[in-house]
Amino acid sequence: MYPVGSKIVHPFYGAGTIVRIQEKSLGDATNQYYVIDTVPGPREMRLMVPVERAAHLGLREVGDAETLRSLLETASTPPEERDVIHDFRKRRTLVTEQLKSGSFSQVMDAVRMLYYMGTERPLSMTDRALLDQGKEILASELALSAGADLSQAMSEIESDLEDMAAEEE
Image 1 (spheres, rainbow, N blue to C red):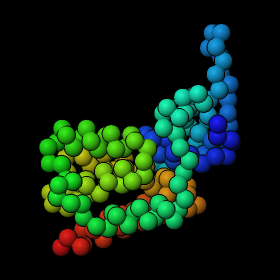
Image 2 (image 1 turned 90 degrees about the horizontal axis):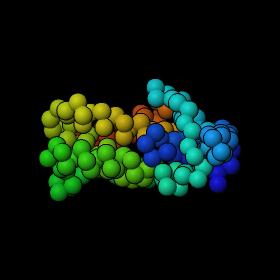
Image 3 (image 1 turned 60 degrees about the vertical axis):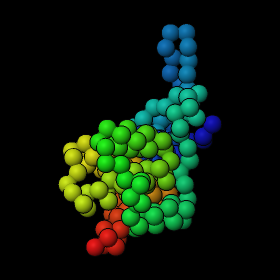
Image 4 (image 1 turned 45 degrees about the horizontal axis):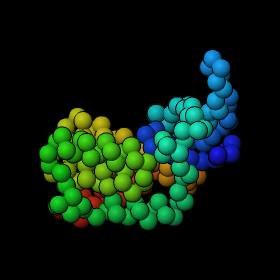
């Protein structure tokens, strides 16, 4: 069980802080919920996650900033051609799974592939939305870990991605 004040990552909504643990009753059952405030930004929200389902949902502690930044360095190198999926349905399925995984490195791989594809041709609306969602997930964890704001973390991520595009030229 995470204590109040823990910095955690929700696999779909990104990073946040547990602000309290609340009990709610529904009929005869009483359950405890983590009340989580996500990182302030355009998608800021308050989440309620059942304590007993937290592990099953993939809730995990935020990684340390140094480790996350070293993982981000992969964003500055283009993906291998075999790792770029050109079939739209397969790509959408894989990227959605990667984003929901809650793993910083898997989300980074999805973002890197989509960004790389966007340097070769315009992305579809779906791919663009998945890219933006992935960048927000990464930025929220980096921001919370490094004690930065969301825009600073997003700039750092975009800078690494731009380095990759410059390397390709």
